[in-house]
Length: 170
Length: 100
Image (cartoon, rainbow over all chains, first blue to last red):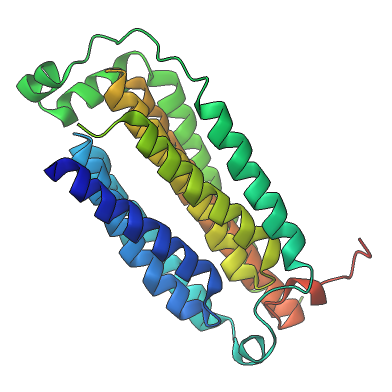
């Protein structure tokens, strides 16, 4: 009973915060609601025995990406954006599309058949700690994708500097 | 024990809200945040699958999704700053130089 209650609270809060994010007029408010959303999602990960992912969620999303968002919102003047309307005039079309997508996904969920369970039971993960199990897997079976991810991050760093720096007139 | 379907339903709901936000808002920063919302919805479903199927590959995949989201945020926000320097607006409909 207690797990269901916890899940109900987190699910309700996550859906409510998502709706708040996309309906606020001021982007600063959206960013702050998003901070709360990320903390709720991190708690949901803790609930799924994925404590490393919860820590990464808080550090990377709440600590890194959202600060980046806040800086950009401060750099970009939003005075006139606040005055014009929130949604485009054709918003019922996109609403219909989103609802249709939800219904399609909901009905595809009913034909879902679970695969046979793998080797990593909760007991094994608990015995060896979650971070260690994940690290072992990441540095053995997934070493090549890990290196590719590091290359993607390098390209992102260089690209962000090149795009955002001032052009010097010669 | 919370059934797996509830997590997938939650993920679907968040993803749908992200899709709606992306299609109906015209502030470029909020559109960008809708993309982050969709990525987070996918992460929720990946990690819940990983827990219920007792396979850690889902969490590895979520790890890579977070890495790509960080790269995407850095590049996208740099593009927004470059755009704002040329056009001084965050409203997407006013950016129509390419006549698309």
